[in-house]
Image (tube, rainbow, N blue to C red; front, side, top):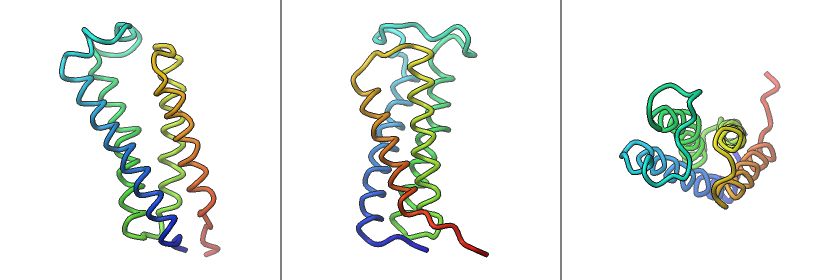
Length: 132
C-alpha cells in the first residue's frame, strides 16, 4: 500500500533534507578542514589517518538510505514506508555510534537523533506489510 500525498510529501522533504546534510557532512570530512576544525581527532580504532572512513560510512549509512527513502516517498513507490523505517533506524544508530566514538560535540547530535526517531516512526506508522 502506498501512503497518501501528505505522508509522501513530509517523508520526502525530511528524508531529502537529511540526505543533503549527510552529503555535505561527508564532503566536509574529506576536504581536510575537519582535521583542523573538529575538537577531537579521528578515533584510532577506525581505519585510515583522517576522517575518510567516517565520511564513507556517513555516505553509506545515512546519505544513501535517506536518498532512497526520499525518492521512494516522492514517487509513491510501494516500498516508501519500509525504506523510511530503514533510513530512520540507520540515522539513530549512526548518531548513537558517533556519540560513543567521539562524544557529544554538538547540539545537532541530539537533534538528529530525534529526527531519526521521527523518520522511523513516520515509516512505521505507514508500514503495512503485504500479506502475500
